[in-house]
Length: 153
Image (cartoon, rainbow, N blue to C red; front, side, top):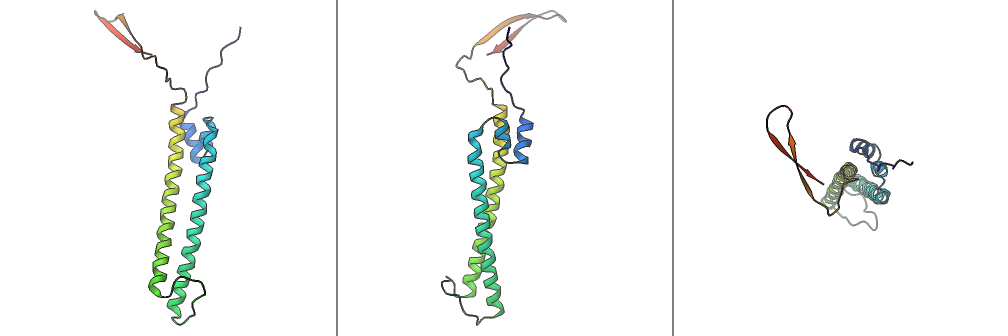
């Protein structure tokens, strides 16, 4: 006689903890392997944009500070700026992009943790079309009366 193997039911706390430690690990724990490339592509994109915006911010900040130190310094060929205000504007623009990248990265990190917890809760959720109810009378042992138990399937 073989025992029927119980369906895998992940623990939501464990899935959330795994996802918080290493992005995508909670999805792997939930056996949703198809989500891993999406999570790591998002992390790679966030890393690329963070690095790009940080490099540009430092470049234009250095140019701005150099221009303030020596107003007669020659402009490098191919650069799109000519004055203080343009350098300050580019520096501020890339600082804003850097902040937005950090914000969206944190939001994506949080969403993947929430996804792991929600998926663990709903792993074996019954989505069948059977939504029947059973009404069963119950005699109460501690007091006189009759009750009704409603059970949804």
